[in-house]
Image (cartoon, rainbow, N blue to C red; front, side, top):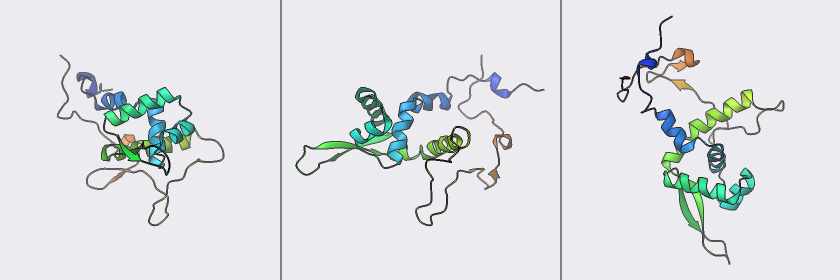
Length: 158
């Protein structure tokens, strides 16, 4: 069997590792889950994620610092001004990642009652699903239909 080409290349520029440095913690994905579900306020996120205040504050600060969330001011009548958290374009681009994790979890980590959340198309109500496709439009059935190749940032191991 032929050895994988990947063994000849350095992993220092791996974008998977770089992305995990930003969003790879469980708590970060729980914050993203809440943001995608429309939960924007700190106390609501804390209640729904079960995270201690300091941990949630740290996760939110990191996501704001990395440009995934932004703070937006709001004020309830008779209350002081506060801030809520909203997804940026960079944050919205994480939606397929969150949906992929949810889909995998529904299939392999869920209970016998089925998934706790169903995603539907806002306009027509049909179920939403992720598909992997090439730029020509062929829908790929699995990872076995993909051939990884060195990209422009790939560097050979010395």
